[in-house]
Length: 252
View (cartoon, rainbow, N blue to C red):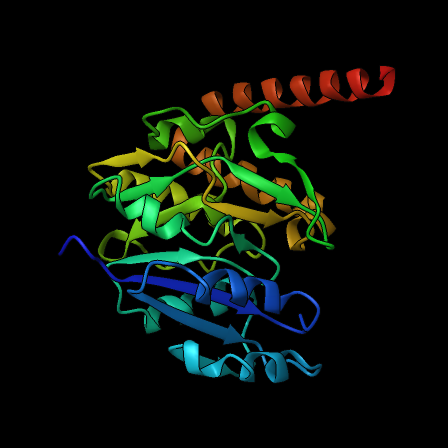
């Protein structure tokens, strides 16, 4: 690897004509030049591909075909990537600033880069930092064991060496990103926490629409990695914290 590694940024999209352009602009406008941008479309029926075509000269690879769900599409993008690192940004997500990749690489070589995440709504308006909204910030030296309390790092702000990045599990439809992050961390030897935000995360998504199923999947994923009893205690803690947070919000 050189001091100018290639970053493969992968965007999965489907019928996202109102969201996709801000994601594209945040990638193709980066000051860092060695970026391979890959866009995987699930055979959109709206104007998504019309928007993509406007930027096709700056997108390395575009495919549009039916898929078997979000993680099948993300695996397609992973198989197309040739960079030293892979970074997933879905439609509506953005790289935080136009010099973000350049600043990240300047921090030195690592297996994984990560940071806090700025949460935005459909209009792109800032809601707040994920750490503030969830009261669950990623530690300075992130380990897979830190994931026992849930997604302490958002996968949109998680950049990993391609040669340790596994395929997403086909066993989960909504929460395979949690399993993927844990497996990446287990395979890593070094991590760097950026002291700046890497990504803006669009809060609307599949897991929000199907929260019950998503929570069930998360429980089984964490049980598989941490065991039944530790996972049970961690989930009781999360339920207590969620209830306490809900009561506090009602009082405000």
